[in-house]
Structure formats: C-alpha cells, structure tokens
Image (cartoon, rainbow, N blue to C red; front, side, top):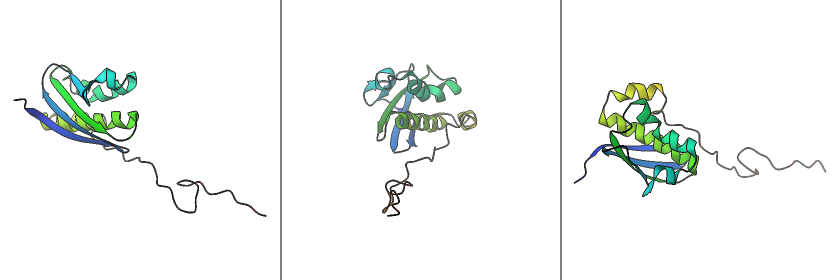
Length: 130
C-alpha cells in the first residue's frame, strides 16, 4: 500500500489542485500524465517544481496531482500552491522558506463578474448623445 506523506489543496483563479506527496524519486504525475507532457510550456513546468527546489527535496518525493478548472497558467499556480502546502505537512520546517518565497500565499486575483447594464465587468455600453 502506498502511503501519502502530505496532502495539499492549491487554488488559483478558478483552478483547484489536489496534491499528494509520497516517498519516491522525484516523479510527477498530473492527471495521469507526466509533468512535461501536461505542461509543455517550460515556465509552467518550472513553476510547479519551484517548492521542491526551494526545500531542496527534488528527488526525495513522488508527486501525484489532480487538477481541474481554469487555464494552464491558473492550473500551474494551483499545483504550486498545493505542493507547497503538502510539503509543509511533510516537514513543518519547510514552511519558513516556502512562505518567504510566497508559495503558501493564495493568489486572490480572480476574474471580476460581469454586471447587468454593462458590456463587461467595468466597461459601459457606448454613450449616445443623440
């Protein structure tokens, strides 16, 4: 039986990621795919790995992530947030370095809702004098 060392939920925009950290050799599995296969953009793959780099535990754990909602940028941010939370569960000493790098802070920026009587969230309909 495989035992999870840490579990973390990460959120960013409308994306939610459930992250499971297990003993292993640094393998990433996101929605059943490899990290580079799921995030072909290099910056998104690097963004997900950042909490492991900061805590110097890149080849210590296997990471299993289920992520849904939003786009690739939001999903990468949600994965990073969830992984940081899971690493805090594994070792409480990690929280200082993760917090200093801003990985434990949930990014609150979301899309503002559209208001009635307007074209968008803030954009008004064009004014007609005549």
